[in-house]
Image 1 (cartoon, helix red, strand yellow):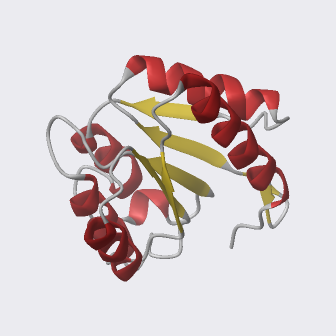
Image 2 (cartoon, one colour):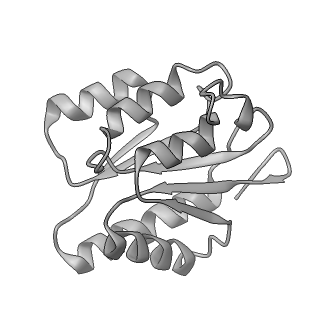
Length: 145
């Protein structure tokens, strides 16, 4: 996966270690070999994406794709999404919500905040693995601004 000829880094914000391993394994199975940087909490992810000063300048010249769980130990994924999408330096970064939450209001809220894709994690392992493989195939053809 590339953006304007540059490698895209995948930022995975997922606190469940088993889900994180499954996501990475199945993205790799789909042929996506981009660097994946995992974060288990929102604070560390925002420090990386927006910088400790939260100015967003840290990602000014980065090509990132963000996989974001909504249920994190330190903050809501919707708060993270809002901060990323409201920052002029990061608002165009693609954000894929990957969560167990299937509440219609939450889905609508994420799209209203600027989420690019919302995927509900299937509870069943095989269905979850299959959904991530399909997501990996999507990543392999995705264009990032």
